[in-house]
Image (cartoon, rainbow, N blue to C red; front, side, top):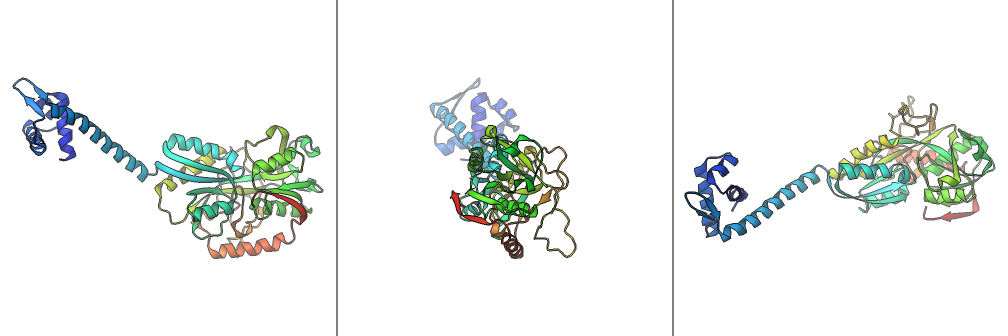
Amino acid sequence: MELRHLRYFLAVAQERHFGRAAQRLHMAQPPLSQQIRQLEAELGTRLFERTTRRVDLTDAGRLLVERATQILADVESAANDVAEVGRGAAGVLRVGFSGTATYRYMPEVVRRAARELPHVRLQVVGEMLTPQMEEALLENRLDVAVLRPPVSSDDIAVDEIAQTPLTVALPIDHRLAQEDGPLPASALAGEDLVSYPRTSSVATITAEAIRRAGIRPRIVQEATETSTLIALVAAGLGISIIPAAHALPFHSTIRVRPLDPPVTVGLGIAWRAHDPSSLIAAFRDLGRRAAEAAGTPAGPAPAQPAGEDRHVNAIGPARPAAAADPASPPAGATTAPRPAGGNSDDDPATASAGRPLNPATTSATMSDHSSTTSAVAPHHDDTTQIGEP
């Protein structure tokens, strides 16, 4: 028995007329009659009672109508499901998000996925650090990660999708919270700072920006989650430097001001470099469009001076952002250097677009980082650490 036999049978059963069924199937009547006789011979029973005036179903025919209808529906459903998986439109995708990307970017991704990939089930984990997500990718506990590069493994590819300016989060009653507008980094002298762990890229970038302003950060507490940092700021424990976001927890108890001079950090989608999954490819495309909709599209990579190692990105001119982007860095913004070892916590500093970083990149970046952090961010022994760095 073949599927075409079932289709021929159902056409005759529904039309109750061989001539009309043949027209519906775009075939001549004699071949159709022959196919039905072959099906009856194979099943060993009559499916139709034929008279000169009408065609009626036998009991066996009525049973086959029910079964054949279900079989053909299942076959069509299976074909559609396989096609959707093939084009990345169905399946389960485990996605990790870092820091403020959880608040700024994840909602847009989830909305778009529900609309554009309705048969994809997202398993989302927010507020992760890049080292955690990199490990989860390598151990196949995540399929995709929205993180802050660089990463340390050549088996992880990263595609940068956005640039985000750093901002200063202040308690609502803080003296520096009484004004709007950019806040000079020099104004942070003497302030207590609650920070991401020192191994994170935001902490490294923050230390470098503050060092360039001629001051040293006084870190009084660390936390891995942006929500915890914001809660500590709201409690008046100190100020914090975090990537900009349209929505943050405790927003009514804090004031957020742009950092001056501006410093930007990036956001990237990471995946296992040799994973052929079309579902991951579909998510990467959706993720880039979601980043543009969220308001921080990635710009082209800045030109490197002649003779400079293109893998080491020292503070310099920011990438140009779309004019309509409310959270894009203003003209003259700076992009901070990449931290060592691929440790980061929120959105990526720099990335190797669509390919894994090579060993030369990691080596050069680590060398640059060690020379910077030794002169930056002295850390008090009484620092309290919250969460796993």
